[in-house]
Structures are given as C-alpha cells and as structure tokens.
Length: 96
Image 1 (cartoon, rainbow, N blue to C red):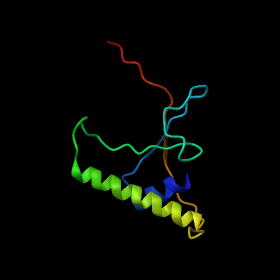
Image 2: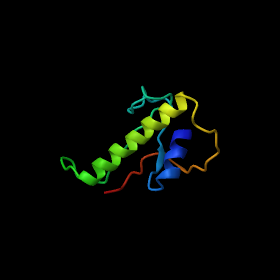
Image 3: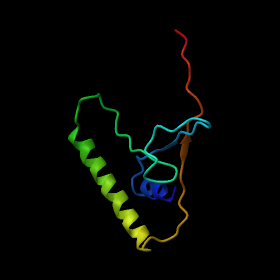
C-alpha cells in the first residue's frame, strides 16, 4: 500500500483498484508481493502499440524498481500519504 500511495502522489492519474474474491484463487501476479499487483495500461485495442503509453508504463516500472531499491536500502522515509482505493464488489449483470 505504501508503494501505491507513493506512486499516486507522484502521478495522480494512477488509480488503485482492489479485487479480492474470498474463497477463489487469484488470477493476478502474486509472486511479486504478498497481496499481488498488476499494472493495467489502457484503454487501447488489442494488438495496438501506443508509443506514449508504452513509454509511460516503462517509466512507471522504473519508478517502482527505484522505490523498491530505496526501500531495501533504508532510504525511504516513513510517511503517511493519502490513498484512494477503488474496491471490486461483484460483477454487474446486464439484462439483454
């Protein structure tokens, strides 16, 4: 959560979305941290590469790696940052 708060503080367009379904296996990359996380880039059609979005994502990943390196070396200050988390409750069924 501290990483998410840090990222949203430096890039306000980043949104944090929590999807937890009790009793179900997660389909996200849980190997990276205890709770797992994913970076979703879009909206963009499948099979299309938008260079600007690609560069923004690459920059975000570098920022994450820098944060983790600084955290591991003790160079990150412990601060309380405000974080908005959007929670997934359940899919909405649309009647046809």
